[in-house]
Amino acid sequence: MSANIVFIGLGNMGLPMAQNLVKAGFSVSGHDLVKASVDKLVEAGGKTEADSMAAVAKADVVITMLPASKHVESLYLGDKGLLAAARPGALLIDCSTIAPEAARKVAAAAAVRGFEMLDAPVSGGTNGAAAGTLTFMVGGGKKAFEAVQPYLQKMGKAIYHAGESGSGQTVKVCNNMLLGILMIGTSEAIRLGVANGMDPKVLSEIMSKSSGRNWTLEVYNPCPGVMDTAPASKDYAGGFGVDLMLKDLGLAEENALATGSAIPLGAAARNLYDIHSKNGAGKLDFSSIYNLLGKVK
Ligand code: NAD
Image (tube, rainbow, N blue to C red; front, side, top):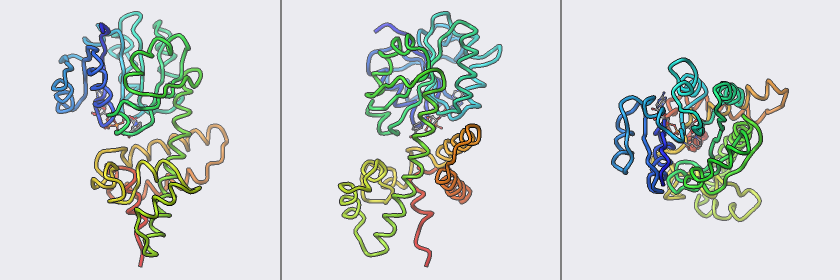
């Protein structure tokens, strides 16, 4: 395949996503502030350039996977930004989770320069990124949505057009608020069972076949030892960080204020992850909230 792809942001998610594009035969130039991450992509068959904007100027497709709104805005906007560097006709896809308003702002600036930019946040965690089974929720024009299929299909298996610019981020905010709440609920339930002498594996298996079943129980169990592949069984390393979940719940709160929506459980969840982060767990996987709910007596 001949498309020249530039991938910016090779973190927990971006690196495996970029590696899947390399595996699919695309020419991928990877960029990150952390050199070790870039080296890993190069080892996997990707390439890089000292000047990321020089690489962007030659790209057919630019994909970004950055932490938050401020990183996306500062990378794309301004005289020396990505929008100024990209060549006409390039496809621009931001996969970061950011505020819907920020996505609309950057897409509007892209439109002024003649680009149709897509917000395409993902769900599925680092395992989904590695396996190429992510869910993409995409906001932006239908034509651009069709044009990016060959790339998104190599990184994900469920690719949805959510609506106009910012819609992908709206779906993501709703989904992650629910995920954050479910992780706390699942942790509470397992803690309660364990306090009653239950084997957490048996408890989880039965609940997984009962009405309490949900993704955090079945795929991403927060109790160490229940699931070998879950971050809980790897000292909560890697995965989806507490601070990123906190960021997403902050986006949900901002959005709820702006739209006059009631999110009492979302707000409670944000407070708990905030306490957990302030206790020093910010970089651990968000399932480590299980530890905050440890037995008190
Ligand atoms: P991460 O912190 O591991 O990776 C972000 C990377 O961006 C870092 O390597 C950082 O060095 C790099 N970066 C920041 N600014 C940069 C710049 N100007 N130029 C180049 N590189 C830059 O985060 P992650 O876990 O990979 O998540 C990325 C995004 O995906 C976030 O918005 C997150 O909310 C979202 N997300 C994460 C998960 C997950 O399970 N980790 C799941 C779904 C969505």
